[in-house]
Structure formats: C-alpha cells, structure tokens
Length: 315
Image (tube, rainbow, N blue to C red):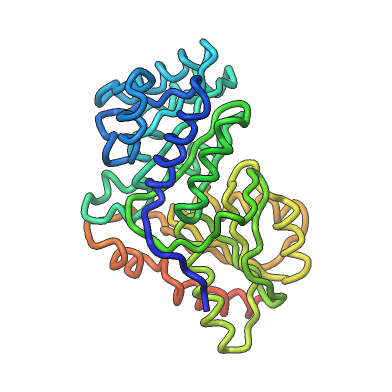
C-alpha cells in the first residue's frame, strides 16, 4: 500500500516556504502578478509587505523587476500561473535572467491539466520544455506539498535562475519531512528490476499506484521520483536502464521536449533500452474536472501500467 499523509495542493508548500525564508533572510523578496492568493504567496505579502511587490498583470515587468532586485543583491521569487510565468516573459527570462545568470527564482503555479475548468489557455503543458532549454536555468517539479516546500527552500540558496513547477489541485502527500531532498538527486521510492517508471510532479503518485497494479501481475517496477528535470540525475537513469532494461516516463506535460525527452537524452547516450512515454500527446487540454481530464488524456495509474506492459514486449 502507498503511504499517504493527507492531500493538499503543492502551491501551499511554495507559499509556506516563502514565509519561512522571509523570517530567516531579509534578502528574500516576492513579486506577484495580481494572483497572490491563487498562487499562495499572500502569506508572505501579509507578513512582509515591505518585501512584496505586486506588479499587476504584467509578466514581462515581473521578470524585469525580479532581475533588478537580483542585481542589487536580493533573492527574488517571482510567481504567477505557470503558463504566464514561463510563456509571456520568455524573452526576458532568456536574455535578462539566464544570459546574465541572475539569481531569480520563478514559481509556476497552476501547472498541467489539473487546473481543470480554467481550460486550455490556463493549463501549462509546455513549460518544462521551454524552461529546460535555457542555459543556466534549473527546473524542479516536486511531487507533493512537502517536497515543494523543500524545493523552494533549497532553490533560494542555489546560485542562478530556478523554475519551480507546482499545482492548484489537492493531491496526495507521499513524502515525509525527514526524507532527503537534494536538487539534482532523484529518489527511488520503490525498487524493482523488471522495468523502471520515472515520474515527476503529480505523476509520481500515479507511478506508485501503477507499480501496485503491476505487482499483482508479477511485474516488479522500480519507481523513481525525478523531481529535478534539470540538472537531471544521470546516474539514477543510467543505473535503472542497466538494471531494469526498460523505462517508462510519466509527466503531466507535453511528451515532446518535456521530462520524458530529458530522460531519453540520457538513455540514448549512455545505455539505450526500450522506452515508452506517458504524457500529453501533442494536443491542448480542455475544461473539465481535474481527475476526469487526467483519465481522458491517459495520465492515470492504469495508463502507466498498460504502457509498462507495452514496453516489456520490446525488452
């Protein structure tokens, strides 16, 4: 059985970490784009109003002002909906932040399909791809509230730009406070030698659930939480390829150029094995209830289990 410690949205882990960072370090600034309550940065706004800036619905300014604060020696966190945090100011992120390797941290909330009724315009399904392609950018996709809190705390003191992807919907909490979190270091949550299921974000729980389905069929799946998409844990991937001989990746994101592609880049260079990908297959989302959308677009545990059976035929 999967051990679950309640359900809560990952955005609250981001917000809790910012408040804690604000207490510890006067250099922490937070910037929002008229979405403070939605992306859970209002707690910081209430406690440290002199270190909070609402730039309005002006995402290019959000990144530009954060860059200015970084140049002045502060540690700015700029947060809004992921589709707007990554898409609208992409050129500013590229040229102003990454080109100069500025110490700007970007929080992309409301990621993936699970924004639900807000529909395709607000469902960020491409930002792993467009952020990980940028030189100097680090990309973190935590799997639950606890891990999001740890990722936010850790990102404050890693040099250079960081993009943290988190969500709105309540999802199972599957990690503990005492679990080790290290940027760039994957965590093996379940061992097995028949196949490796590698996942990030919301799909980590689905991967664990898929492993239980497979176990009833005598298939032993290794489940790896790769919370850091860049820099990715190449050793964990190579070891899994060598020891399991087949890999399935799972992401709440476009298959093309996303998390699965990042894993495949490591595999093809070091230890080519059969791979399959679970994710959004070259389409936009739509309005609907979050878990209904996950089922419709093939992002549930049963879909991962079916994909494992498919890849094993190629092993």
